[in-house]
Length: 296
Image (cartoon, rainbow, N blue to C red; front, side):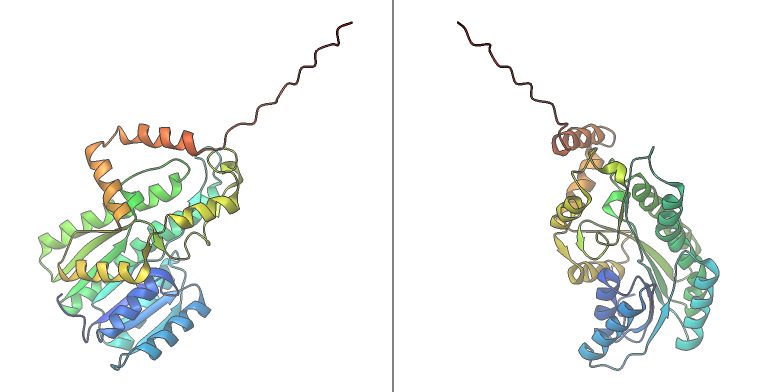
């Protein structure tokens, strides 16, 4: 797909961050949009930005949606096809983050992150794939993460979902190549992108004193690692779609961590442990004061 003009794209997580940036970039190229997010206010802000910045007439529809809800996703896909006449691209972009130890993580938190990060991608892919095939030309773009290539302590739930998205999308791409149906797939691995994901993430209390000093400090530290803006990320993704790339890395940090995982596929874990020990809070030790007895 070399041009997005006149095509129809469905985007989840469109209320902010990369989802909003993708919507704006596609609208400027004359692509019609079906936007979804749980945040209704953010969706309306995205819609207003599109109307203010886009000269070419494009049709935009919005839907308040929980991507972990399969029936809701299937209904939305059918509505998109009915309202727009076809669907050519689906960006399964919605995602959340969770920090916790494996031992301490609550099952409800794991179900929450798996429902959005993994099942949301599965629901979006399966719901829209028949419509993409019917259009005769389509592309599935699933957002994993650099942490779908490289694991770290305290992020087991996030790592698990992003590794799962990677495996799911790579298998999908191979099947589509074999079918020669006019539809393709790309897996996106962003590094630190300046979005709202950190502010909306869940950080379990078991992380304090283990890998972080405090929740507030941890959020501030992570924000400093977000070195790539969402607009640049959107442009990189769309360039990857045009080139029909199987994998898209975004940001210098993504390339560095990908290279490290490739060169040291098992040994990189020891390096992460070493670095984590150096950055982790130091246990406080009591200071014993001794007072010499005065000599007579």
